[in-house]
Image (cartoon, rainbow, N blue to C red; front, top):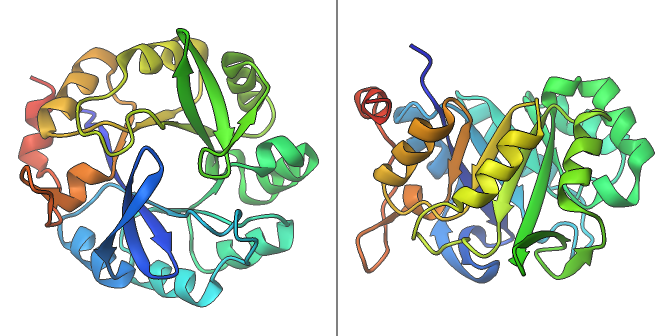
Length: 252
């Protein structure tokens, strides 16, 4: 039985881990090292950690912290944030990071994308596409949703999968932090347009939301932030993650 990939997505800032709503109002969640330890204990399939201000604030990836997180993690780890050179990728990858997540450079430096893909392997090169829906079309944004990319969404997806990207994480800005369910139109559009692994992010509010995606689309990656760090209507910080039995129930 092929179980779905269930992936906590953690947002990193100088203060620690935060959770946003529509890419605004970051709310402090906790220390990244302790959080990774807890997800170790809960046997998370993998984890995505994104330094959300590294590119916009123009600072280097925080190598010491990334290395500490990588040493602690007992699940595959994908890191993104502030990556501008192949040398940075080489250093980060040397820590034991399994995947490199790219966003802004996908559009500013296509040659670098190819070099990164050759160095780490296609399977370890992940594209993060942050999108908003407007007039029934999806638009791509970078720099924490502040800068629109004037490229067709699906044409971009096709270009990436043919030019070194081995996985695409599609993140709905409209759904970020809403906890009111995934955008199924978005999932369906990407699912039908690509042959490489995809991961959907944005909108999960309960395990039923995860189950709905699994039942309709099978073993695509299902990522979430708020679902795995909040508990209850008042959003008390409490880390959680489905058990193996709960994952099996998603398939029923």
